[in-house]
Amino acid sequence: MAKAVSKWDDIGGLMTASQRKEIEEFRKAARQFTKKATRSRKAALKTLIDAGFFTPKGNPRKPYR
Image (cartoon, rainbow, N blue to C red; front, top):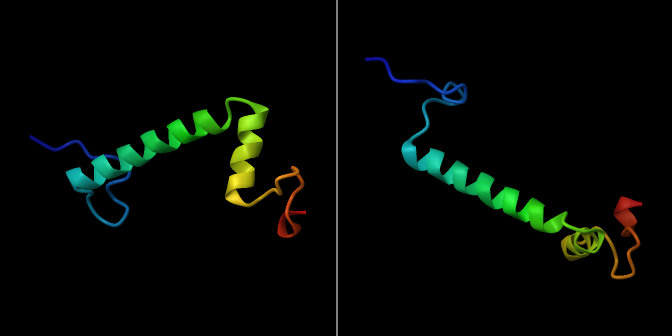
């Protein structure tokens, strides 16, 4: 019986089960981060400040103006 092939399997060869698991864990973490970071304007601004894109006053830093 033929094995089901994902559309991503042909990129650099077949993925192993552990690689698939790692990717799925990353996707889950990314969804959780996005949900938390975008739940309100205040949360979004705090995330951007913590990442270094904005100053604590809420202004964009020099490279991002």
